[in-house]
Image 1 (spheres, rainbow, N blue to C red):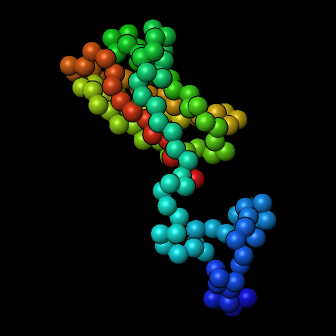
Image 2 (cartoon, helix red, strand yellow):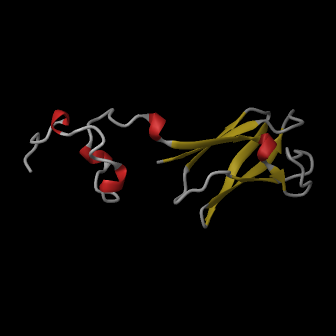
Length: 129
């Protein structure tokens, strides 16, 4: 078909559904800029209350006892999502490892230098398409 040969007013509402389009038949390179919004992204957030310390097994972890904090995301994913850690305490926290096991994502947060913080305070954001 030539470019611009079919317009939206040529297609009845509900005629084209996701089940009638082959997987990956339409990619973002086929769509106009701005046609897909951030609202269509799959996302998940967690905070320190979902993490479990490696030594203390406490949730939230204990900065004085633990060296790693384990998070298992609640949603299932087909591929690794983009993970963002926003640390909000006076200790150096970092993403040490991310694993995809089946459809489950496990995130390991490392605890390094502890300054004046007594408790961990952070948020994790997972973004997937």
